[in-house]
Length: 328
Ligand code: AQP
Image 1 (cartoon, helix red, strand yellow):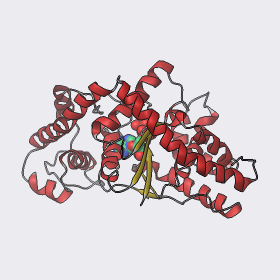
Image 2 (cartoon, helix red, strand yellow; image 1 turned 180 degrees about the vertical axis):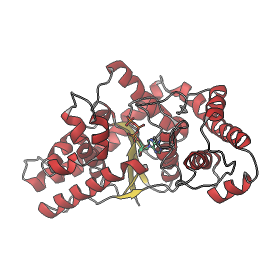
Image 3 (spheres, helix red, strand yellow; image 1 turned 45 degrees about the horizontal axis):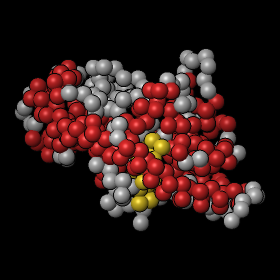
């Protein structure tokens, strides 16, 4: 059985980009794979966070997992900081990571650009991500388009470690969904819809009400051709809208192109908003029930125990392979 690990950073309010690139994929995977879905709170603190807000957002992300339909009986849902093996393996892997390869990571370049005080944790972040994955001996990792480079580093580190010490780690494959792996800003299709840098008009949040969702899609930028056609090169605005509709209405691209042939952009946008609203309504209701509940804490406690059982076993093997003392 394939093993999957993935998570959504609690660095802001969840938007439909994270839904398409991550949550939507989780739901498809949980029935056929052994899944670990975590909240990477240790990743969030690589840039400054308000402690109270961080805790709130971490619980919100976990609540969205459950509200969207991740079944805690099937998948382990947990906070990264509750499983100490993540930080420990990250240190061990840092001994194998090269300064130069970390410096080439485009996300580090983007996030550190123009800033004076950049934490060293932001620089080593991809190594922690490698530890997250390798601890579970994950065979597959669902990631958005933007995380491909980090996954490549994970694969390199796993191979380097296995060759140098012992075959402890599985070398994971990326699962990059055809649809939903890049959902861009509604105001600018060259910029990813992002949590920590949201433009209020360009970003639809999972908690937005129907009226706001309608207004945001009504304002979404388009081109002047009036043709609903999927072509990221020539029609990025419309391709982005098609991608969102495909995720939320569960339709394929050719079908969408057929359905909206000869229909104006106005009607297309109204239908997208409707599909998003319909999908989010039950999620928002369940989210409100669970976010402050004991039930959520119980899910996280149980998930952390299950995750630690797997993670600790791998960590022990890695330590033994490196010549570090372990008992048992
Ligand atoms: N706009 C997006 N389109 C498609 N996939 C996306 N993902 C995030 N945004 C989009 C994918 O969701 C997974 C979890 O991402 P993350 O939240 O842990 O990290 P991120 O990619 O850095 O997301 P943000 O929103 O841009 O956060 P900040 O602003 O804090 O860096 C990943 O697989 C990601 O690809």
